[in-house]
Length: 317
Image (cartoon, rainbow, N blue to C red):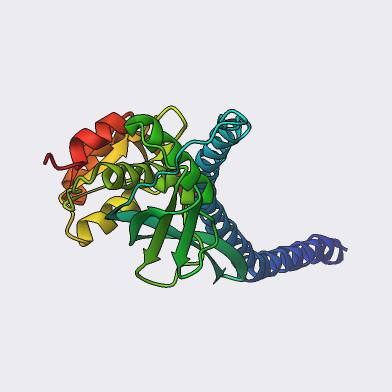
């Protein structure tokens, strides 16, 4: 009796041991199968987060550029709504014309959307590159037309900037161009699909004034900036790309709008997240003049209006 009654505890011990072994095997299975799968998912999420951070930075850059362009168009639209005064009816004024020519190289930014496959995720990134264009103006007898030709054909028309440039040039010089045609020629070094047209406004104003006054242009200098009807030089995008292109072309000085005196630089901040590194793009304001001088090696002069531009670029005769 004593022996048979002791068999029950022994049987219970065997049952518990079996349960423990089964539990251990289940834990080993979970560790071997599910945890690596979760680690892969976490790794993918971290990569996706880092990619989204980079895309967000690029979209901010593109948005800033689009805002600058829209502001320029708004300024030009307000100007076009005011029609120039015409000669009084019944009066016949003698037709006079002006001739002239001027040319200068201008920095520009080309933009392209590139698609990439990153760990199964398809991402798009905005790629910006700097390049140089040759912008020239010819003033010859005509009918008061303002014409623009681009080689090769470009995505953004320069006509609005050209109209404003001629308006400002006439106000500055007092010239009457009603008997002349003003023809801008814009030639890019490579095939260009899209260029920020408004940012050439200040430069187009400069070459028009140089042609009207028959003054040579300092070819060691180049500039970028929008222009409004009051002669104000406004902000542009792609400062670093344009400065790099200007330096590579042999220019010694770049004129920038005062509104571009501060750059936003994004620095990488790494955070450890359960063994995975999460990258965050942190914005920081820095001096454009100091950064460009140190990292690109070209002198920067800030300008606020067309008078500042003329003082820096036109050679005294």
